[in-house]
View (cartoon, rainbow, N blue to C red):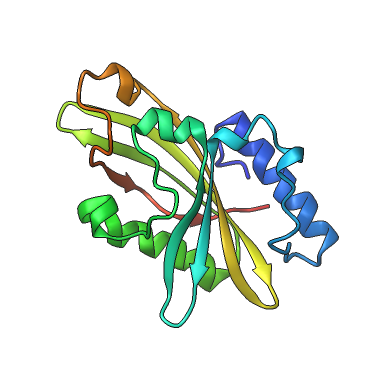
Length: 171
């Protein structure tokens, strides 16, 4: 966990580690209690993992993320319509969590235009049903000038995500 910079993301990872300790390393999708994470909810995405074929859908997008990036992706699939040319790398990051069944971490940028981007840090935490990853909890810390302050149109504006990862986390 030493790679995680954000104190709030460290708190989220510590919560997952506690859940994992109670469940032989595989916290169930019902183990996540939002009431235990009130300060973090605005920074969390819940990603449904759909199998056969593998795909991902945003179950929930925290209000802090929605306000900062200028759109609500709740209910939308992870695809090119949503993430333009970076959809493939986002898909691969989620697929790595499903394949490895282990928390992952990445740093990068959310790029809105040539002149506007935000620094991003993300942790990806698997929740299980039986032996399959069913939900990925993505904690996202964004820093920089939010979408509302950039002067660009807000509603559903496109953006791309560039990261250096993900990498497995040492817990």
